[in-house]
Each structure stands twice: as structure tokens, then as C-alpha cells.
Image (cartoon, rainbow, N blue to C red; front, top):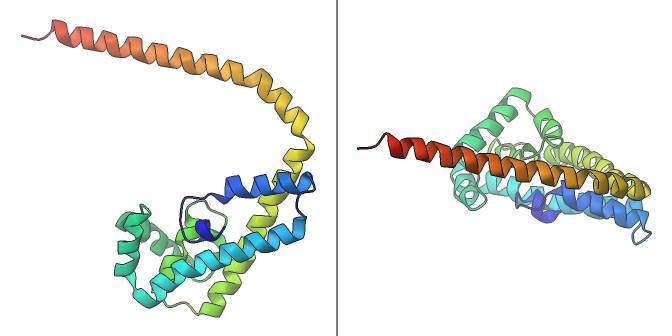
Length: 183
């Protein structure tokens, strides 16, 4: 969760439900998993906050290029922060992508570190509890999920194959028409 908190491509939407599944399988305990995930998320988000706070906007954009954060993304998040103030830190914790990016403008705006940590902690802990619990529920309903996927995946595969065939036919037909209208 440190990596996701630091805006690296490790999505909590995948990691935490898997953690919940391990909780269901009794390989982990629920509350220690929540604590570890939340502390990791807080540590990671403090990295991004610190970049904005101590190094400024130009450093955020320079670092951002490495993680595919561009000027437009930063402007959107800054707009959220300006519109909602400190509450944006809490609200953004429930919006994919914004969850991690909000730390940058909060740092650039020199939000008080204690306030940032308080809003971030509430949002991160709630998010982690929900996703880990969803993993526990998935574990409890594992057989029903597998039965549904067994019935559904072949249909999805056939639909995808039909889509590819139709797209290829469409492209071949379009190319044929362009070839006939040429010089």
C-alpha cells in the first residue's frame, strides 16, 4: 500500500480484496491487515505530500512525468483541492486516481501536516476496511462466484471473438473500398 500511496501503479482495488480473501482463509487477521494496509497507505501518501510541500509544484510535475502525471491531471486535482479545501483530501480518498494524487496539491498548498494526516487517515482506513471486507465476502461466496464465472466467461469469450471477426471484416471492407477509389 506504500506504493499505491506514493502514486505508483499498485491498485488497492486489487491488493486489498485479495488480502480480504486471505483473511477469509484464516491466513491473516482482519484488523491487523487493516492497520498494516492503512499505515502503508499513509506512509506512501506522505511521500507525495512531502514532494509537494517541500519541493513545490515544479518538482511535482517533474516527478509526475515518471508516473504519468501531467499538467492537466495536476490542474484537475488542484481544482478539487481549491473547491473543497481540506475536505477534498477526505473526499478524494474514495475516488480512484484522485485518492493518491490529492496529496500533491495539498502539499503544494502547504496544508498543515496534522490536518492532512487526520483527513487522510479517516479516508484511507475506511477505504481499506471496505475493500478488505469485500475480499472476505468474496471468499464466503467463492463457490457461487466460480459457478457464475464458469457459466458466463465462455459467453463473454464468444462475444469478444465475434467482435474481433466483425472488426476485421469491417476493416477489410473499408480497405477494399479505398483501394477501388484510388488512382
